[in-house]
Image (tube, rainbow, N blue to C red; front, side, top):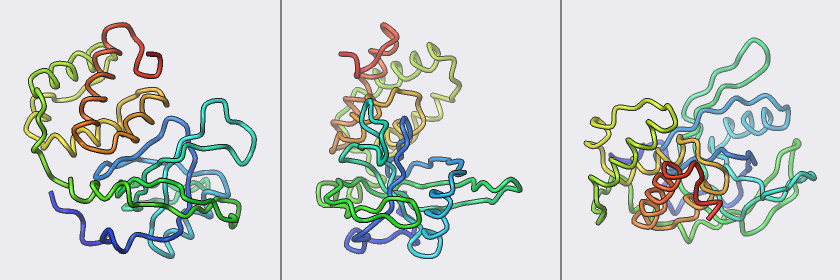
Length: 219
């Protein structure tokens, strides 16, 4: 699947970018993350993004972080707003489509209540190179068997037979985004740079969760 022509090339990714810290919420390249925006500072963020490049980064707070500004993980993923709707009660319903992961090189002074960073994209050029690829040395029967067991164990519904026909790289990114792993497991998946490593980490999380109700964050 080709990357949308509306998305910037790797060399044109922004030098500064807003971030949205939210526990348990990650987005990955080619995956869609629905967001319900209601805090004034993040309404400002979305409004400003819509006026410029439509991009912001999703990052998770560090475990136990509570004081503002909340301490966050160094690595997150940027997305582009591909759909949004305003509600009568003052919220914005946004679809953020993942574009590329990044490391936070520096945090700048915020504006209108939200935070700005200097993203370092260099470690994740592979997010552009992997788009649509499916040349991963993975035991596919084991992977889809483990996914099916995970979905059944957590009372989740999905057409696993249909999923088997999708390229594994983009599928894994979508699963990282939508499956209800805890924050530590999701962060481990975000930080798995190469697609092969990410599949291995995801497979381990699926099997551990099915085996004993826990995940990578507790091992």
